[in-house]
Image 1 (cartoon, rainbow, N blue to C red):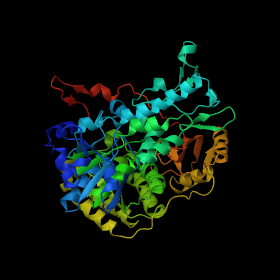
Image 2 (image 1 turned 30 degrees about the vertical axis):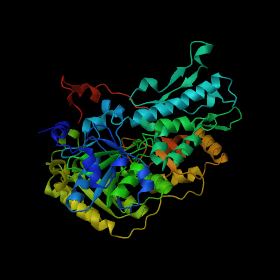
Image 3 (image 1 turned 60 degrees about the vertical axis):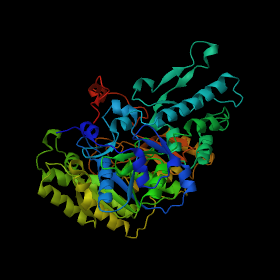
Image 4 (image 1 turned 135 degrees about the horizontal axis):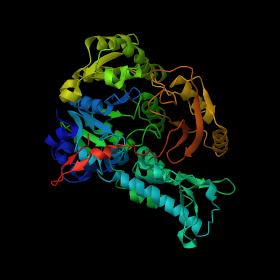
Length: 555
């Protein structure tokens, strides 16, 4: 059996100019990166009249080591939509370089439902992440230079909130001391690094609707506080112009293609467990403008990515999904039900039924909390049995939701036509989209609403440090912002070991931060980290390149 990278490397890739022509992108808006990648000038959205298409959001159950295949399903669904005659464009997140070498291999789909060139997408691509990291670190440099050169703003070095960033899993950089070596080498202080996807610059980048909006958001970033507890912004440091200049070209969405030639925008990528987990609004709007249907996804399970897509991205940008796909696998549901990893290939209806509440709660959240039409996509494995598939279908139908078997990994778009037809049907239905909470009220109220309505927690416990920060942020006028929950992706709770649909738990908020440029409050739960680390056997061990430049080990 061919690996994902072998399938991708054997593909016949069309010149990107041909892909752009399919969706009517004039040549003057194309900036090509080699033969099969291009950036599309964001001025296209301003200068060309278009009618927005239908928006389809793909999300999933809480992930397990057994796999869910959310990106694979997203890509395969887009191919299937085009196969049934619906002009469709896909919009995906860019994968971080760090996890490529850390936890897993690639993030470009799998099997015969991939975006290509897979190796480029999973590595440096068009340099967007490097630009974001550079902008982040320029702001850090300007901040420390200001302190070194007289500190006119009266910044308290004990109250600096801005960290440096690098796109790598490197726990060694979580907590550091910088500025050592003498007066000429800066002012000594504690510092740290976030992974680039956790930088507020990434969130700002993904939520910006134009270069002007980008610059304004950058200026609002809070980097620390003065001795008098007044916030200090990037604008106070005269930074936003230079930051925007570094990001000017990166802001243009990247156009590539699927194995079947479906146009795909891949742009921006904050992690959903520590940020809002969606591709850029610029890419989403471009997909909507150029296709009759736009298929996009949100990171990790629906309790994270979908919640933030709906409560943050939709709220801040005004877009609305017409339908939602919740992806699951029989194997992952059995894992939630307690099946051991080495027994997942064996039929186990008892474990499957025990794990099904995880899927059903995600579905209920989509249909009842947010009021959106939904279909469950079962990403097929050869080991799935008819009895297991029937059990899932029957339980979902009790909630009024259809189930479609997706075989896109093995068959490409042809394996997703059933799902595509159901998505088209749902998009024609009226929906009563609502948010999980309103912006009125305090920060704690919004945290409580998410915990109770989406996670089904009994409530929240806010640590004294977080309570103090909430009070300060509300006094500074930040109480009307939506909340971005930083939480484990593996459970509805903040405890990664609680599988299925747990009850009788509370969510602990240990820290609260403001991302004023992005426009949301970040609430950190549990042991979630904004800088991951490498394990004993990272994916990097399996990655290699031969004398011809051919890469292996990315999957």
